[in-house]
Structure formats: C-alpha cells, structure tokens
Length: 355
Image (tube, rainbow, N blue to C red; front, top):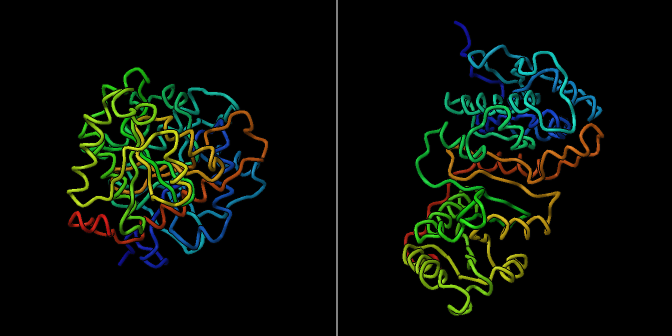
C-alpha cells in the first residue's frame, strides 16, 4: 500500500509553514535563504519552500550558502523530511535571472504567482501558515495584482467576508488600525463605531491566539490631543469613545481614546499589549522608530497566520549580502507559535476585561 502524499517523518505537532522568497529583485531571496539556513527553524516546523530555482540560486549566491532541499513535483506529491525544507519548484522567471534593484513585471509576476500557489496550499489543507520575504507592492501590481494590497487579495482567495487588518509588531507590542492604504484626506469619513470595534476585536483575537490571555488594548484618537474635548474635532466624542464603551461592556479591555502623540510612550513602557490607531502612519511611524530591523507585519483576519518582516524589498541593497533577517526571524517564530497554539477564549464579561 502506497504512502499518502501528506505523510511525514516529522511529528504532527510541528506546523506546516509555506515560505516564499518575496520579490526576486529585492533582498527577499537572500533573507529567506539565510532564515532557512538556521537549523533551529527547520527543526521547529515542516517547511515548504515554493520558489523558482533561478531565484533561489541567486539568493543562495548572495547569502553565501546552499540549502539542502527535498524536491517534490507537485502539491499532490507533497511530503516532508525532518530537518530540511521541501522545495516545490516553479518556472515563473522562464529561465531569466532577476534584474536586481528595481520594480519590474517579471519579478512582480513571480511574486504574485507565489502568493497564489501559497494560498492554494492552505485551501487544500496542506499548510498551517504562510511566511513571505519582503514583497514590493508596485511590482505586484505590474505582475497582475488589482487589489489594494496583498492582504485584500488573500482575503478574496480565502473567501473571508469579515474585517481584515494589517498588524505590526515590535517586540511584544502590537498595533492594528481602523483604516489602512487609503489617502489621508479620506480617513475621517472611514472612522466608524463598527470600524473601531472591528479593529479592537481582531487584534484581541490574534493576541489570544499568540498566547496573551487578556489583551490590554489602547485606542488612539483621530485628531491632535484626541480632539481636546471637542475643540479640535468631534470624532473622539461621537465615534471612538462610544465604540470603546461598547467594547468594554462586551468584555474587552479597551482603553482611550488617547492622544496619538503620547500613547506610544506608555505602550513602550508595557502599559498595554496593543495600540489601535486610526490610520496607517499614526501607528507605523512610532513602531518603526522603536524597532525597524526587528519589526513584523502580520495579516490579521485570515484563516491561518500570514506574516513577513516589517522592512521592505530594499532595492538599494539588493545583491550586497548585507540584509538583516531578524524581523523575518521574528515573523517565522510568530507563525510557528500561532499555528501550533490553542486559541485562548475571549473574556466572557466586562469584569474579565478589567481584572
């Protein structure tokens, strides 16, 4: 009797993590190779590397190391061996080496098709998490992406109808936001009670899945000084504060609204586990100042953890062998932890939120 293709010599407790090389023209291939050259990562999970061999070879040259991979021909033949990554090779680049240091259609197409295959793997029940090295949104659009970003693309691929959000992590501090990649002039009109509530609930659920039993969540105001009692805007009084009050009655430890220019002082001190901001740069600037090299981006609301480093494709240093991978390492560790753990239930009462 033949062995089913998904069986493995690795203990079933180890999660199956799909790893993608990111944009072939950036530092992604180098970073992914460096990550998978660390044996502890291969011991922590069953890794499926989906890559074009020519891009993988380029990353290995830059990283100065060669991976010992187990090749498979298709997802139907997927299998794993202890301590080494499985490689599913794809001819996305058509034999052409990537042009480094610039957005271009071939690299964008390869990045986009890698996402498509990774999500297909999850949909087939063959993966528990996705980790991708840095992508480039302009290249993705050149390669076929028509969505706002890769998160919205994956939301469609996974048929997720609820709220999704990009989380950013630096150390133990998490952030989410009510609005994301929209023009600043449109932000105020998109701030709603439902939006604030969704942003708090989704990050609370993710924190519990990552092992934080009772997440403490600070919510920023929209305006300077959180509106100064209504003298610099009414969104805090009319929208944000009522949303927080409702969340507290539902058992969430939501606090605020806090002035956006001071909330991260207490957050960095450890007063809360997460900050929910109203728009992209309100949280991103603070988080990247606190730890750009170690930062993690997690796509929240999807059926499995999907993460990457907070740093970008770094076209300016592509091919130089100097890309740091600690952010990608933190993202990998988070994927393993979230894919392995048992979700902690949400608090049942308002008393639980304040205990």
